[in-house]
Length: 374
Image 1 (cartoon, rainbow, N blue to C red):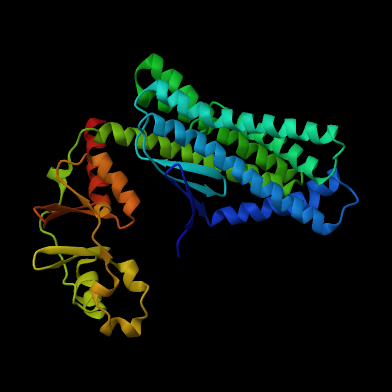
Image 2: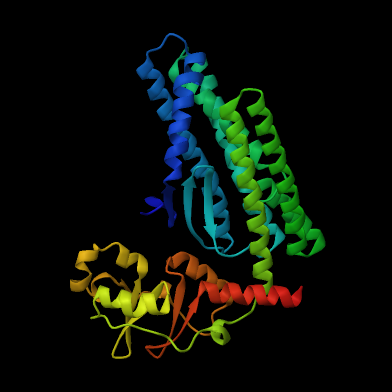
């Protein structure tokens, strides 16, 4: 089952919704429909409260999308490709393969998101004032006031100087500018981010003990999320520094095990997947690479049809996301593997399969170099 669904494309940036987004959407609608709007607009019908809650929740996520788009458009303007934006339970994330090339670019990208949130906050504030002046103090005004407040909170929260929040990225840009060392700057900003995460977790526990169960759980969840994100972000920077400049040619596996497109799935499982225990195999006919067949694809087929279904019927056709050459940078290869969702890349020279590179190969290389270099 896919974890994310394509929603639209804006400025050539695919926008996806993670299934966890529906969880937070439901929670926000429930909270607004049962508590916030009945408190700010007493006397309305239950249906009106639910409609207000749904509209406000959707506009909130539109605001979060605008926040991420601001980051992404600045990145694109500075020649940093954005492969997509995913809305999920904690907001949104822009998918970017490379770190910003300079502190200046990092600063501009980081500050763009909070500035967009503050801009939207101002727009909704002005709208709420205009509605008040017109005497329209009902549902529309309440929705505008909520969006003014929530965008203001999002902007302020993201400016907290703890990596990977926007404020942490701004801090990293400043530290990077003066220290000339992105690894050191990231370490400091990440540690501050971890400290802030522990504060959120402690605050959440305090809320739990004081009887505020829902808010306590949310603070704890957000704290653990930021704690993990800060640690992962630092590891990514270390990995990029260690793997920088390494070409994959020396580390690919030359003796590649491939399968014919006409092999049936039952034989494919017995003779290849069970025997070699790989997660995928290239499909090759007469030295011509046709595609890749994965264990996941086989599991999608009913077992009683394995004897009549061939690799050709279910394989992923060959495309550029599955192919590299020996001069590809290790970090670029790792990013490409992350995008293609098959965990490996094929090295094809003169139309023939010359080798294979897996995510495990790159991670082992990183671990070895990290141990050697201390």
